[in-house]
Amino acid sequence: MKLRSSMVIAACAAALAAAPAWAQFKPTKPVEFIVHTGPGGGADVLARFMAQVIEKENLAPVRFQVNNKSGGGGLTAMAYVAEKKGDTHAIAVFTGNWLTNPLTRAEAKYTIKDMSPVVRLVLEPALIAVKADAPFKTLKDFIDEAKAKPKTLKQSGGSITSRDNVVRQLLMKATGSDWAYVSFPGGGERIAALLGGHVNMMVVEPQEAGEHIKAGNMRVIAQVSDKRLAGFPSVPTIQEAGFNIPNVEQVRGIVMPTGVAPDVIAYYEDLFQRLAKTATWRKYLDDQQFQDGFMKSAELTKFFDVYTDQMRGILKEAGAKVVR
Image (spheres, helix red, strand yellow):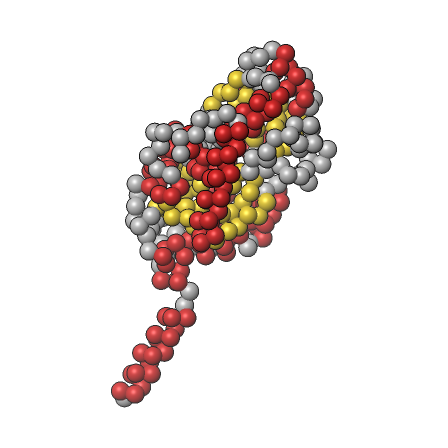
């Protein structure tokens, strides 16, 4: 009898040792899915889609509920996440802003180092778009007008360290042109400003502008990408249009508060790895012109350092004051 009990105990121990780490943790209540934009922003759209896929594919035992924490160019959401230390039921979509904003904002209390990396998901190209009835057929048309009439044209965008504004700063520095920048907290508001004629141009992710482009409300005049996207084969990249500036890469992925056990991070890492393998997700990447940028937690930590160094250099080149 003792021998049999010992064998059972040994078998259970072996099974536990062989089980994946994430099996030791599972969420027991709805997971708070934090985004730094308002409704309609890129992070908001992505988070809501992933929450739907997780539910549709039955990838988790609980629901994921999006919580918009806009404000401060992402700093509000970053502080909210960082101060939830130890919370195993809170995750957030990070973007490149979460790495670049603290570089130029002395008031930033937290950086991406104050959070636990989970996964990187996508690399996003962007489009430079104008209203469909705008006089600008090409990016050169817009630049020429901005040079001829300094500070009269306007661009809608996010925070001052967002890709939107970094691209603007680089273009202005390279061409000697000058136009205004109007910051909005959400992607929906930025698009509305363009379509309403309140601004003249915007840098926008394909997923945010897709329906407006299909409906003929927007005209794409250039692409912020290493190569032309399949959906816009006739539209040149910024470099092809004759403007030799660095390509500003946008990234999106998942982080969570610090102070959680390794098996908690492993659970969410596995969850999003399974999500990234679904046919629904693969189709979404193709439809939105995204690049698969999946990267696990350990690699993501190193990526944060490399990306931050790269963006520090680009921000300096663009003329921004870097404080970190």
